[in-house]
Image (cartoon, rainbow, N blue to C red; front, side):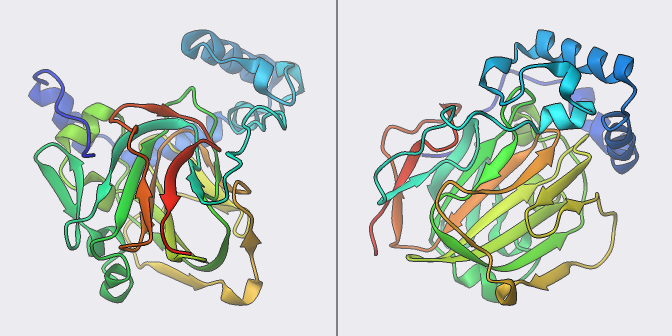
Length: 293
């Protein structure tokens, strides 16, 4: 299954404005504004957001907006224990997030599809690490887009042990469907955090892609990862920390929405046949099946 097709004709201005704005500055300002704890400000933000995006607060552990210290605390809210039941079949790979499927397919050698007529390089996505990329050659990938209204905590698709994390600096283009279909190699150009786990079926990558107005990303092992400008890749070896996560366990979150990309090696799994572009999925829902144990 390939990525979603193109939308109706989009004006040149809609495609180029993101090249002109100060992406990282805007993201930093948003980070500040969403962590301002003045009650009248944060409550207005939360109420306006809930009304505009029709957020169902009944799923949240805390349904009273007055109890959130700031908008970001509300945005990264935890859900009730029964809000996202985990698929019971241990052979199923579960969705790490609430979101919609942008692409879900098999790599063609070292190439992923971003949108119809638009592809990008696996080594470039992984920060130029050819050795790491070879582990996923002809493997399987899924791209999951989180809209602003979605639950924004990220969970692990199957049991895994953290080995490595690469923080790759880059741009902050928006990752909404229009941008995905109009900005070439978007996911390999945006700032991203590549998390590598060992699993029963081999290596697995859970890639958190930054975006315009994503103030920061966080993981349970490296709390708040601020936006990075141009610079070197931060390559951290975490194998000594013994971070082992059970399928469905939380591994991090976005401070405002973005995209998650999953990578698996060839001949280890298959995506479920019913998955389609733009299909909504929920964290804990089965999206793939292990074929090698």
